[in-house]
Length: 585
Image (tube, rainbow, N blue to C red; front, side, top):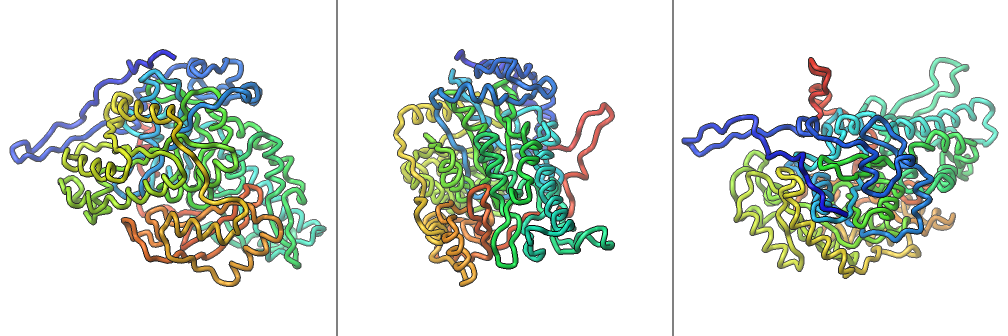
């Protein structure tokens, strides 16, 4: 493949002049992500598809700049050899920001820039975080995927299809009870809640069917956010429509009084749900600012589910690209662990190399510096904060894959601070490469891209999941808690231990476990930064996601329906006088 030329990349432009020069204080304002995305010189999606050998007749366009890839084409490339899979993960998230998706996009562009045939695979955005705390964006600066506005809003309708399929099942459960309850569902044990793709704390716990006999039988239930739906996890792990339908049928929706399970297929909803999800199953193809191909498909919660883009998108990309750069949600203790132990296990994947993203700012926060002081040089704090990064490096290496650290550069970083991180990582037996993709696009990731390609091509990794299928469910939980979180023990009462044993007896003991805990710490305390040891992991609840194929282990307080903050991002999102969207960051 010819070397990609990033002719549409202009030098970074400043919107505000430097001030207080006599005092040595600089106040510089850069273009926002949405302003940069709006200036993108996008190419027709058929041209993007041709870079990966996708004929135009196998692209189902949604406008001019996004399309779904047909199932017929996906079927036709299954005999191709796989390319190299590159996982991008990160340290524990901090308010300082890490830029994992930005680095994923920057690395993908960088690989194309040095002449490699590369594709990017990331998750779709949820409307809840978009209008809540996080705002929009798929990457940042000059390392973005576009069209930015559509991707952060309705995109190709995948999330709406998942919401509709999920709620169809909920409606059919209540309808079955209303019309005689032939399956003898215990109304106290209906496990299937409803979902919507929005943050709304008022819907966490509700009572339905009020208003009289004609409205059904009142019962307590609630809503989760769509990304927490088991249907979302199923779509992202299914390999084709037949597998999708089987997994949907395997969903446990309720229990009888004798505690025997009732499945989605018993309600006879699996066929109609598959119909609603038929188009959503097909991966979405878009492009980066540098006109390189990017698959954006699926978006399971990184807490309650496995936090990775779809197996369909990843495996398809691997069949038509030489290098595929993907990411996993939150830090490596959650996202990378689940990527390795759940997604790779289920899909037969093996990463060739893992990139751990870190920032100097985050190292300082882990070293005890307040967010307001992050602009000041503090090498000692950087060194004090590095153990968090070191823990993630050790953990990823335990899966048998080589690790490279990408230092996502901020304008306030100093040479001394960068060198401190590089020296620390070298002592850990890895290497840290400074990346300036936010400012310079692919030109800022050439060093990283060359090194990643070199390692991937060398095939020095020997990937293996952390535990085998035959290990007990409690043993799997303890393995992750002790080896990844460095906990001393798992606290699980008799009720939880008995539930795990019952599932093993029922034939679910070979499933992987999906740990649901705070993303901000190795512990279950979100305020405990760094690399703590000597702590315990309390298991509050366990849930069986039989359709998705994993056991959810809830540790601490995890919200499956987030609320809006005191000042939600939606307050700043609007149309300007020219009809353009403002406020999507």
